[in-house]
Amino acid sequence: MDTKQPVTRPANPRFSSGPCAKPPTWTPAKLADAPLGRSHRAAIGKDKLKAAIETTREVLGIPADYRIGIMPASDTGAMEIAMWSLLGARPVEMLAWESFGSGWVTDVVKQLKLNANIRTADYGQLPDLATTDFTRDVVFTWNGTTSGVRVPNGDFIPADRAGLTICDATSAAFAQDLPWDKLDVTTYSWQKVLGGEAAHGMLILSPRAVERLETYVPAWPLPKIFRLTKAGKLIEGIFQGATINTPSMLCVEDYLFALDWAKSVGGLKGLIARADANSAVIETFVADHDWIDFLAEVPATRSNTSVCLKFADTRIKDGATFAKAIAKRLESEGVAYDIGAYRDAPAGLRIWCGATVETSDIEAMLPWLNWAFSAEIAALSEAA
Image (cartoon, rainbow, N blue to C red):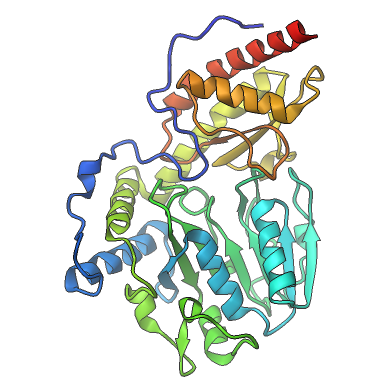
């Protein structure tokens, strides 16, 4: 066992899965141009919000006929707005394999009380995507933030589907190649891959989704904050920067900075490459250490952002306590913050590898992880 402390420390020990690390060049001074104390309805506010929408389109390669809107309440708000506004026109298929997908199941079944076919898989696995019924509206996460399992591609989604696809892509957008022609509704939050500030989400609608909004009225009342249409027509202003509620212009400025940074590192391809490089370092570490393994069982489904790990050492009887001790030890040394598994997930660790994390910091942190494991195993032996 390696009980000697490593020498090199990460320059930035922030590996939280949300809010995630800021871009490497970020400083508070980058937000000096934020129009604070000004109305978001003033010309300067409208211009900033419009720029956030159109730069999002540019970086992600979103088709020109897709609408992009800034929503309240992060990715959760964007998903709730989508489900409450669009579902109910046809039967629903729910795919869930981790905490947030399970949360959407609860909303659809217990709150909206819809006729839903629920298809689940345990943490670390995916349901059989090939048998998904696309005559229904299909709701799923692209990347399971709390399981580290992602769908490998969009090949399972047919072009001639009858229902809509509603995709929570909050840990995938800006790190994985999303096939826009396969996605009718896509949501994500600023605080994930680009390391933006919290409380704002994005809602991206295909023409098929807009058609549904303009031809279908849900059976339930919609609160003002959920309403995307008026008199049977889409409220176009929402998708041009006239947000439903008042946004934080400081957060908008932060998002604009992150988008500009994304362009500076090569746009979407550069962001994906950075996340891939980070997760590849962990793949090598796992291959070299038999006491740890990925929670995602199939390599092709392993996330390159929210990398979830489990312990494979039979000496560990209480995985949750052991994982908390590892995370606490690393935090106390100032080498890794917030890397414990999500509260509903199996015991283990979760290391964010999105593009705002530097590969050198992952490389510097992992020897400390090995040291912490050795120290905790030694403590277990002494207690026995």
